[in-house]
Image 1: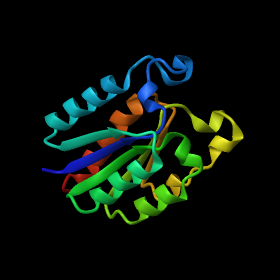
Image 2 (image 1 turned 135 degrees about the vertical axis):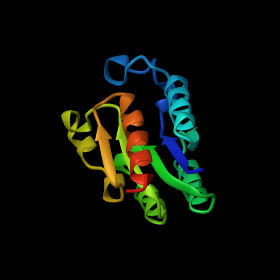
Image 3 (image 1 turned 60 degrees about the vertical axis):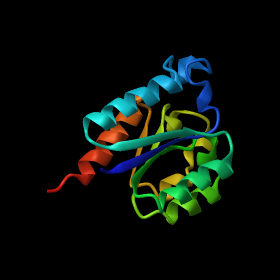
Length: 147
């Protein structure tokens, strides 16, 4: 069974209540439950984790190198624009990496236009709201299918 790790960065625990005009009304629990269901239907193992702490996200990425994880879907949130440490951890991971952003970061403040994570990501999904996570999981599953 293939395994995917979904990492949600800082403040995503507030999904559904924090700036719903930007991030929507769906909660993080709703997002994760939908991903667990989609993964199970497709025969995948999935782990979803959220942290407001950079080191915990890095620890999870490093653990994924050794536990059979095939892919990482990551919404690094504000760490997108600041964390060389998360980039370095992702560079040490051999599987696929898909970067997800709920909003279209390119239509927002200029500082949000740069992503360190994009330097490693195999794909970037932005502006689709919580459906971006589902699109990322679909991409991971399809990439693993034999030709």
